[in-house]
Length: 351
Ligand SMILES: [Zn+2]
Image 1 (cartoon, protein in one colour):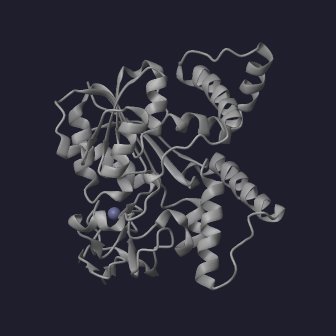
Image 2 (cartoon, helix red, strand yellow; image 1 turned 120 degrees about the vertical axis):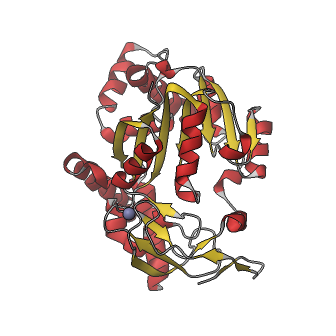
Image 3 (cartoon, protein in one colour; image 1 turned 45 degrees about the vertical axis):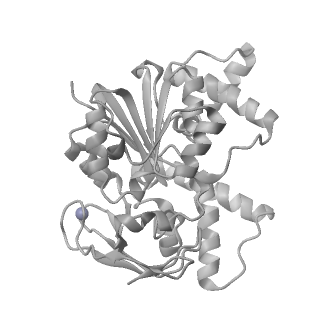
């Protein structure tokens, strides 16, 4: 099976019939997937592993073809001013939660506001969103943070404001340039392995929604281990192959995103990979913070596949359905931890 980019030159692909992680033969799960996000032409197939829960593209684009799949990518958008008043309110709420849960200096807020925010953070969707906004990085973990796949640098700028010395790595030269010019950040263009940092350089390495895009996740994690100091932490977020959204929407699930998502992990598969690298597990959970947006995008995909009109975002019923889906997922996670749309993993380099 061959994909094609808008210039109509076929994308060179390689066969991957067995599970990349455990070597078992994969079962064909989807046969006619299309890129519904950025419209790269082509039809794609995915296999799934019955043993570890990994999903992967087969055939998949070879490494040298990957840049051609990213003609228009969200990291190219320059961060705009947005709604400043709303942003400052959110920032004050986040800072208070980061102070309470992650040890950062508290926001200067009246006591009644602080009490209200403490009640608000009892809602898992709120506390999860605040924690994942900073990738769960605790103030006491050190001083030097590396973000792999930093995109336009918004996250690094946030962490710098919280007191971290920050460095980024980004394969996309346009996004890397935006991070430098817009935020004045130190960003290396290329992969983590290309840069070749000295060993033990960082206290924290964050890898947010990147590992599903790379052809050699083990190589990425081995290099992360090498550049971390002993006791340093790796933090990973990635779509969850056994989420409620995937179970509900199947081929229309937004998290599949062929052909850019080469591998989609289950919590079990990611845990196996990270520990195989040499990290010790500190935290493994799933989060429902993206459930509403994943639901909305998956409904649109579903409508396209069925050839019907997409749901009207302005209708109250459609908005309520998104909140209902997120609520079901959040309550479901109390019983089945693994059904959130996103995996959140923290590993530590042994001392
Ligand atoms: Zn497997």
